[in-house]
Image 1 (cartoon, rainbow, N blue to C red):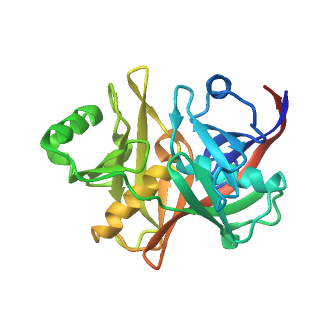
Image 2: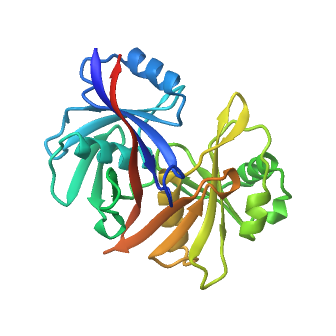
Length: 283
């Protein structure tokens, strides 16, 4: 069956420099197995499938698959799916409500970063969802993180659970330079690492993220979910103030630019979205 399809670059500072997501529009009738098989075939970090909403507040429902499993929530697929849904004719006001397995996620347009000269380019932000697990990691978990990152335990200034669905645990390191040197070893959990730039720098933080693939650490170019939960952690801790700019992907030749803002106590994670591929797929 023919279905509309888009591949969207999300959070890139320039064309094709962020994190791509594959979006299948009009996915009604697809089985779980068909969705998982297609996500495995695209071989991207995530592939999403757009369905009619089940809840009246939502504009659409999205299911999010990695090549091996379904996720309840993910950040760059949220923005990329919203971008593709609107380009396909979806109608909404300045705020769009997305339904996913983690619940309802609010998304808003960010016109100040939209480039009208480039067709297919927009900017959006999502409201950071509530974390399902937070707080300092145990000594045992700190040791696991240090071992995975292949650093001395004393190099970790803090290790926190910042899990808003994918299962993130994240280490704070002393400097962006040290962060960019990391070469993690074997891994069996989702791991983030962050470092603060000196006060007055344009980016406030550098961030990296890894997920286990065949027992080893595979680096994600730009990670919306982790940026959301890291923002909740570091803003609440007083280590950062909003708005700020985060960089991610530097170590793997990407140019992720994540804009973090706070309105009335709510944290928003935003960035550029760009259609790179559009057409149809037969699945």
